[in-house]
Length: 393
Image 1: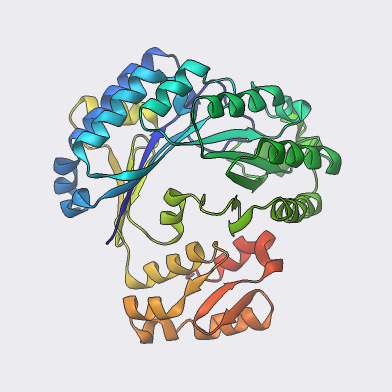
Image 2: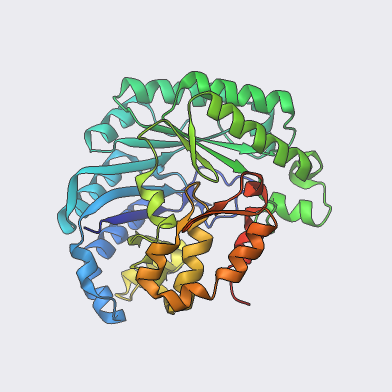
């Protein structure tokens, strides 16, 4: 039986990090009330909003087994607003009893009282943006918290009853060295989170720091960003370290103790249905993709005037669906199952990809075992180049 994921976007932060390429922003707290109220309006009006865009409303009856509040820093909304949103979702959607309810947070943004309240509101998984346990690296990218704050947050979360915690780490931050990266991994392992996400620093012109690096600038500590070779080596070291510590890698950037893989994120990689609520949130029902206005003020203005928040809408052709099957599914260590793909899209369409698969396997970039196709172990750091091979020109 299919299950549904719900993603709620909270695009607010206490401060904008220099490496961030998301649409989050620092805002006055009075905007939070309006945003929470309009999120509630969107949730309550999903049936009408989908009918207006020709989205089959049957998806709203699919049992929900994952809720994810992301950002930004959702905890900035506080207990009252977050509780209101949780109750609204549970009242208008069919949530399963064992729903995985994840909330992203940043060290320093959640005290013991809020953590206890969140746990009592059925939040059962925390995703903590530690990024590094080196204070110099944190300051370099504009993070407001310290390494000690990250450790304190994990300990407070345990005391509040959280038994499923994920920590984010980044390889390649300014001033990062082999020694400092190793210490961050060691500190994370001692805290024993159930899940670790290890991301490579992205040089992206959408961020202030990335723009400086691309154009050879010196602002935002751009000159202190390690080389691509260092980042690749750090990632490989991190993979091995986490494996030795008992964390199984199940996706390019994600590692988990047995049974603690992210249920919600797996929906993205396995083409499962999910609905996005809030500014910039994306949705997918297996055939259609749609998204809300990215800018929070455009999102609010639209809902306040009775207009739909949906800004983008696209029906995927079978060929586009197959492309997504490959470049999303190959992110997983288990890869993709061609037999499942043939059943869904037909043997002829999948056969047209055989030459590409054979070529990449011959080059050592893919491994094929019967109908199972996955990235080779040496291909993870260049995975984006490989994924481009599965996108039509």
